[in-house]
Amino acid sequence: MAASTMTVPIGMITQMLDRLGHPPGAAPDAVVRAGIAPALLARPSARVTVEQFALFYRTLVVQMDDETPGLFSRPLRGGTLKFLCLGLLGAPSLRVALHRFCCFFRLVLDDLAFRMVADGGAEGLLIEERRDLGAQRALILELMLLLAQGIASWMLERRLRLVRVDLAYPPPPHADEYVNMYAGPAAFGRPATLLVFDAGTLDLPVRQDRAAVSAFLRRAPMDWIRPPAAERLVTHRVRGLLEARLDRPPSIPEIARALHLSPRTLARRLDAEGTHFQALKSAVRRDAAIIRLLCTDLPVATIGAQLGFEDPAAFNRAFRQWAGMPPGGYRKGRP
Image (cartoon, rainbow, N blue to C red; front, side, top):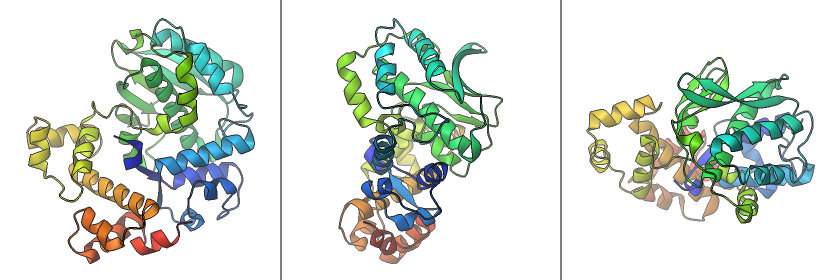
């Protein structure tokens, strides 16, 4: 699934602004540079594209000379992640590389640490919180798990597969987003926060070289947020099929046939991954609508028709449910 087909909650922006101490409603230069309408900051149901979030994040990194902008008690100066990636190259396996990953962050961070742990018959990468992470704790843990997952996937030069992702906090308001964030099912309220790896994954060889480091870092944090297991989780495969036919969304039986499953098995698999067909259909249409409103000048009625809405009024009603405002109003806030 291409990152350009996705959106993320505006809360990822506003929480980072809160962390940096910006007054409510304030729109710093990073918001404007990312093409995010400042008016959207006051709308909890608003969303931005993955590209917009990535540009917002990168702008803060440059302005603050901190590659984890404002998240921790001391900054990670520019070049920190480059040295991390270079230090992982040449490791004989992902397991060795992740041990180096843990050692590196022990040197540069005081607020948290990474540790490799045994989890029954599997192994995991655990985040140990050493200081109070404050009101944005969940966001910080999300981003650091995404960083670890993104780097692990990049090192293997293949899409990662996780047994599960354990979160030591209750489900946040955007818990339904996790199926598109991580390469395994999320489990909330767990004793610790960790990525649990599939059998054999940690023994795979590191396949990247020095030439690949700069390109990977230039795209950051795009490659952390991009769904890392599109061909493995049924959720991502269903979403891909829906995206291919936005104007005529396939039915559950059609999707099931394409995936060589019965409709009942499809529903059971989606439920195990924390979602269901109608939620995916709605999310795909929502994201496509927001991206078209923000990135094109197509008439609202045309966008609705492209998404399979024969009646413009039906599209307006659906969009109000998704974003809390009509599509025309969403577009007017565009810089």
